[in-house]
Structures are given as C-alpha cells and as structure tokens.
Image (spheres, rainbow, N blue to C red):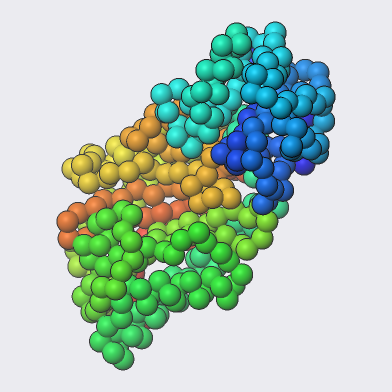
Length: 393
C-alpha cells in the first residue's frame, strides 16, 4: 500500500524538502515499486512524481499517457512538447532546496543509480540540490513486511532441503556410475525448485574443484567423481507476487573423509562468517547503529589475519529482496564504501569466500533483522564442516 503519511514523515526526518521520483520506459524500477505500479505496466514517456515534505504531491505526465499516475494522490500537469516538460519540472521543484532522487554521487551505490545524469542536470538547473534517496529506498522498498518475511522462510525450507537432495544425488551417481556432472546437479536443483513452487532468475552455480575458485562460475559439464571438492550456490523464491529470495552456498567433498587442505580453508571462512553475524547481533542488542561497511570489515579482518586476504575478492554480502541482489544496504567496504544503515526489516547475505587456483570455499547464509531488532540466520543450520558426501549420504 502506498503510504503517503509514512513517506512524508521519512522525508522530514531526513531534513529534505521532498522526494522526486522519475521514470522513462521502466528505467527506474525502484520508483515504480515505491509508487505501486502493477507488474507489466506499459509506459514509453517520461513522468515525474514529486512528494513534498508536507502537502499534496504533484504529477507530471505526457498527454498520450496522461493516466500513468492516476492511481496516486496529487494534482496533475500534462505536457506535450519538450519545452513544456522542462517547464513542468521547474514547477514541480519550485521552492525546494534539497530533493532526494535515485542518484548516487560518483556512482557509489550502483543499485541506486537509476536516474540519468541529464535528468539530474535538469533538476539542479531549476535551483534544487539532488541527494541520494538510498535510505528512503531502504525504508519503502528494501524493508520487508510480514508477508514477505513469511515467504522468505517458506522458500528457505526448500533451498535448505535442496542440499540433502544434491548430496544424495552425487553419492548415488558416483557409487552407481562412477561420476556425475555439474550440469546434472544443477538440473536436479532446478527440478527440486519446480516441485516446491519456487522460481529463480538463473540456475545455480555448481563448481567442482578449480571451478569453485571462480566466484561467479557459469555451471558447465565437468565431471564430478570420488575425491572431488564441490561448491553449490543456489537461490530461489516462491513463485508469487512480491516474493523475496533465499540465497545459500555450501560445500561438500566426494569421499568419506575431508582432506585437511579443504578443512583448513573452510574453518577460516566459517570464522569470518560468524564474526560478521556476531557484529550484527551485538550492535542490534546494544541499540547502536550499524553501517554495511562495518560488517564487511569485521568479516574480512578474519580472512586477512589468516593470510588469505588477497583471495577474498568480493564484498561480504548483498541486500536480498525481490531480486536476489536487492536494493538495501550491502555488506561492503571493498567494491563500494557502504554507508547506508542496516535497518530492521531488511535481509542480506553474509558470504565470505577464499578462492584458490585449485578450489574455492564460500559459506553463504541469509541474515534477517526483524522489526523488534532480533537477528535471524535463516534457512537451516550454519554449516560447520565440509560435508563428507560418501560418508553422510
């Protein structure tokens, strides 16, 4: 539900004069979600919707799509020519000094950079300063409601159980045929998702041995045999409107006993994962604010102190939402300096990894902070050891 009162309260709390939402051909999915556009809504002309800190919102729409914002409150201005569009923008922001838009200075938060530089130039030429809408987006797009939290937990039952299906499939195939393949394992996971009403935008990562050392490996047809190390990264959500993802990574060894070289690296990764989770729990228990970069630092420090810092080549975690890489705060001080707050109602991954030439270890869990600031690690138990597949299955 579009909650104008709550949005305006948040705008005032941030000391802004308003929030200017703009879109062209669906380029700003964040604005469309905030404004409750139905999925698949067509549109090919520019529109703007200005929400002031107080008072009635204002709309700017093109004549041939004059009903584009009719589901929202506020007075409407209809333009036809480009000159009228620019004049309409000036009228929308007249009297405003500081406005939020889906803009990120120096592209520091790429997921938020949905408004093009030319549009920002047009607005600033009208006398308004444009600032990043990052924390507003978090509040009204990245924060889950109770239904989404329930859907995440339901999806997590099946992403978690997929691993037992996978490990058993590998064990059965290796015992009966001597091998299976990465793609065969991926197909088993996709069938498991379909059976339980889950969907995903992309098949999972199944990487054997050196392939696990590539964090975004595209699953191929390499054989999986006894003595091999296997990394499986999978993500899915319920096949329902507004559903949110569950995203997990676990590792196994095709044998009865896991060699020490794998266990040594896994334990470092697991300790880094647990350090990140502990920081989140401690901060919310004490009521102190927490920014995404701090979680990354806490996690990365463990791996760096163990001497593997150069092999941890991605951020600690990402926001999770209706896309697997969501639009809230990431746990990142590597690829970006994430200063957005970790907020109650938001979910994110914690997924440190060490990627060596011969194999890679990643341990990924999802962390959800509920409205009471309780911290949940979702979708099953934390992995505490590499799964000895032929022993356990």
